[in-house]
Length: 233
Image (cartoon, rainbow, N blue to C red; front, side, top):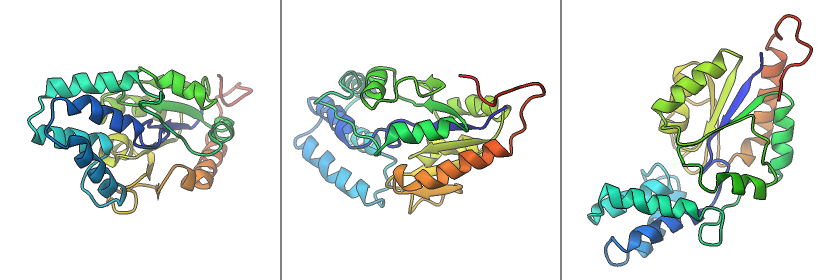
């Protein structure tokens, strides 16, 4: 028996608008005049936390749809942009001292990465951050929010769960509906009315609270009879 922490990827672990702008550039050929400039302005507004957009990908998709770009063209552009994830065309950053943070959490909890994004580029990015292999489970193309219900249900059978993400409706709603704890990070954290357990402008801002959650959850989770250790890797 062990607690679990479920991390979203884009906007939670992967920071910066690099991948979103790569998506915008892939869409631009099918969109209207000045599309990239309009996206850039909307992203600035999104970063204030009061734009009404879920994330940067929502910004691009909404503006493109208003320009008449078809869903099929959007999907093809998204796929092309994800192939460039972590390169100079789609750079990503992460929080300071991520390897140390995950190492600390991993002593108390099972670490799970669950993202709606495809697998393309994710392993290379994790390796560049020095955390390849740090997650006990990696789930891609999850299909949140619906696809997250099963994962949270299974993890809840083994102990407490904390879900962390930047889009309350997708990353966290299935978790709180099942009685798990939640942490909302990013631009919408301050203004969102979502009933989350923790909230902050970034994962780094919640570092201490998340470490405390993991240690507390581990200490309150009984080990199976006859087990010598809490977590098997």
